[in-house]
Amino acid sequence: MASLNRKEKVPGFIKGLFSSALCLLLSSQVMAELQDLSEAELSEIDGAGIGLVLEDFMFSHGTDAPDGSGEQARIFRIGGIKSTDGRDVDITVNHLYISGSGSNYGQNLSPVNLGRLINPYRINVVDGNSIGVNDKAVLEIAAPALVNSIQGFNCLDAGAQVGSGVCSSRPRTEDFSGERPDIGLQMNVAVGDDRSANINIHAESAVIDGSYLRLWGDNERRQMAGQFKLNFYSPELSINACEQDGSACGSRILMSNFALELALGNQLQPVFFDVDGTGNFVLEVAAIRRPVPGQIGSNGLRANSNPEAWDFYEDYYSNPDYRSNLHIGNLSVGDRDFGSARLEGMLIQHLEIRTKDLAP
Amino acid sequence: MITTLISRVLGWGGLLFSLPLMAELERLDDQTMSDVSGQGGIYLSGDISINELGGPVENSYFGRCDDATKKCGARFAYRLKENGGWMVLDDIRGTFAFEGLTLRVRHIDSGFGGDGELFDRDVLELGLPDIVRYNDVRFKIAASNTPRPTDPGFQQTDIFSVQMRGDVIMQGNLLVFPQGNP
Image (tube, rainbow over all chains, first blue to last red; front, side, top):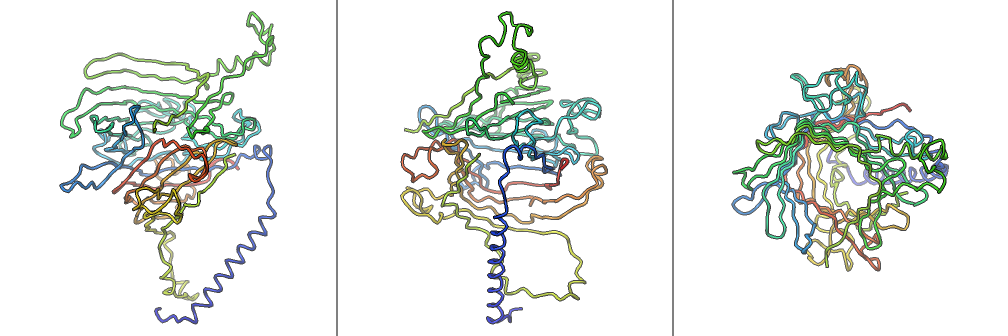
């Protein structure tokens, strides 16, 4: 239709202009009708969230060796970090992948599902009252939820059957790729001109079910507050170092049946995010409030204390949800076994992390 | 609670599709329309560039990318605390190109290791393009005491920067659907 002439075009254009102007006009009128929802009203909202599932997903990127003319087809680099003596630190990511399990340390990439249709990744606004953050609407970004052990699968066993554990994501079977990806990262770090060997980190059949990030605003501190829970399970997490050309590799540090349950912030002690006056990032977990003198009896028993205060501290110190755990089934380096390691019931009582600018 | 500021320099140079092609479009009459059996989806190819040569703002701090003394990327600053400092996504620039991003509504009632049958609903399917070509995509994560670098007393700590170039393999379908009990 190359024969459209100028006369036909102009009215169309003007019509378009008018209709968009009309739209703007209409929408501005509608906007006048909108009313603020109070925090209390918002906190009542427990909306249908968005479920996300990645089907047959595969991700791979990295850095190629320079060709004859020094050009690199692919580059993946993290920089901008400085060492304490002021030299530039450059992290070159040789390979980052997310693949189906059985990838043989990222050699054979295959597709995998992330999340289940009946238990997907979720982006949600939750009623704070239902999760202990009173009268707040809380934004939640969550991995598939943990399920009861009748429906679930063992979080670590790559051959788990239904009814063996609390994880919802299923391991790979002969005819189904499952929902447990292999994740790996190969990188090397350069400080100034000194470049390290390649460091490889691989996690097989990884599961992060039950992890979430919750964000809300704190009224008193006028600040963003959050709660972060990371569950990470893998039957085999390995770390080793190789020559940069991949010719020779050192011993592999192998952590079998690796389970990390990290709780950073909770309802009583949220994590606060801020940037201070000099432009440095601050992450803080405030200390729990101290009891008012006399609230807790000198013998520490509930009968001699203010029951409400006593229950508050009892819950704070005994609730397993507030605590972090790390289990390693077996730690081995090369052909030496170090046995199993357990770090259980860590409670973060106060934390403050502040970045510091080393640039002159 | 989060105050947002999109800095002046956020210049989206891309989305250079189709405008010149509009003159070629022809109206379909009802008869012709009734013969069309839709594919029920969208196939997208794109080339998105952000400040590849520089943003629209030129001042003491921002300039063209060939001027080594100036920053040329886009900047996005957001605040986490009232009267606090700003988190910054700084110096955003580069080009992404992809072919074959698909968008359609799909009914799922089978597959997914038995979940499909239980699910039996419609989802919005975003088909990833297999390969996304990055041409020197860069950005920086930083923390700053003022939203704009030209504000008085500006101090900034760059936490880290990322540079990506080449073909990124990104395969699969992203399925989006409502979840929970409204």
